[in-house]
Image 1 (cartoon, chains in turn green, blue):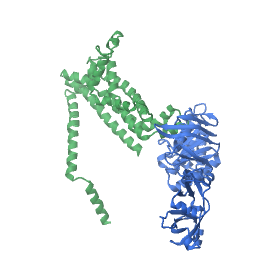
Image 2: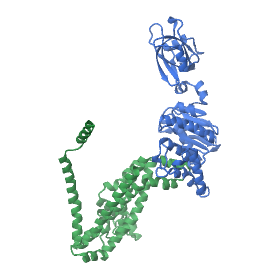
Image 3: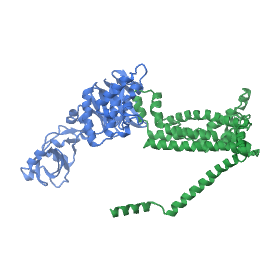
Image 4: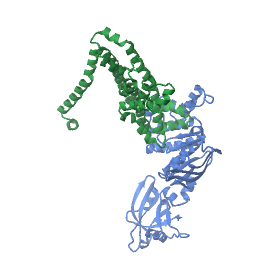
Length: 284
Length: 347
């Protein structure tokens, strides 16, 4: 008995790093989080309430701020459902079918990640702007895309496209399609198979992808900045409004808007942890 | 329902998985598709099911050409090697699935569904598990539930893809007998794929032996065993001793008094067709006892041929019952006389 416990102690000692290594790694991680996460959050809250609660509230309910909030919500409301559908369709095609161009599609899905957001915005300006490829056609039909809401929606759609697909593809690849084949052999249609068999199996990964897609859709700055035109009250999303307010030295307005975005970040993190826990719990 | 396959061919790139297969399966039979890995048996089964499509040929189910019909409308039941139970549903919901996804006009009421599911679960003797999830069941239980689920939609043909491949040996043995009994109760035309020739011979009423995309032989288990059509079938089914032409062991074979009717390449002799008696004349003995192995009710005896002129001896395997062996009172190194009852000659 005595030799067994000493063997176990010896084994744990071999696999564990020395105490000072453990402590310093933990300290570095904590310092990093404190400096780059907690401190900025604290600063945002402090600066937002620097002139008191009533100043904070009046800036928040200011007409331009409210339009910015509405535009951000509208963008998310349109782009997230669309990208959910696109993502599911792409994941299904890639993991269940063999077709020419499959590897090209898989690479293209990652394209918005590898391209700088500013370039993403520029692509749309080059396509739909006054001097763009479709510029003349759009002008004659009196359709405004660049420097208007449609441009913002399109560019956000592009930038947030990969999130849902990237969550689903590895999961559906690993799951295999035997359950779906079984459902089909029992007489279920393709749609019923997807609804009753595939969807319940991917639900946590899907929600996770939607969450990330939403966070990015609401928080996107670079690409939206290029196509927006920064027209106050019309084409400013909340992140853009933060920049505009800050450039006018209206720090309370800037930090008040920033506090909403920070709140969104915290809610996202909490939901993310919950979904991760659910997924692990489901697998066990 | 009867199944007829005409000129079925399937290629994966340049690899020919199935080559002009013609097969007829009468209604009500329990058929085994038997063959080594890569012979095309699973591909053939999936083409019958509609989970894959052939490049050439027709599939007729009960006389109706279903070659281009979708798997969900062929009226088949499929059982997978790894069960493919719906992991997020209970056992009850799994079995009820086929009935619940029917079109509104064909769908029975929930009360009828409940009755049918419990009847099926009782048939597979697992009604007490109806509230469990698949991950709470053992492999054998999962496979029986998978079978119940496939039977729920009353298929005209049941297709099983290596149904016992993922199970322990003892569970496999029990389920083989269980499947055979179930089939004699229900009489649903059933086809199962296996690479285990013992399983095929034990369970099926008809065995189809496949090799490299073609059918080598089709017949009852006794037909295939007693009258193998070629060397491949003879070697694949049961145990056999192989004697190639012009080898010293072949000359030994002929020295025991057997001669082929015409020029042939290979002789196959089943171990139980080799009769051993203690050598009457030591110098004229045919073989020497090298070793033996206990295989339950049988003994496998390893003989080396007693060849003249210092030729290298080869090993020959004979089989006899425990009792016969005890009566002979043989020891290692004993010289024995060999009489061969039957030889299969092949080109």
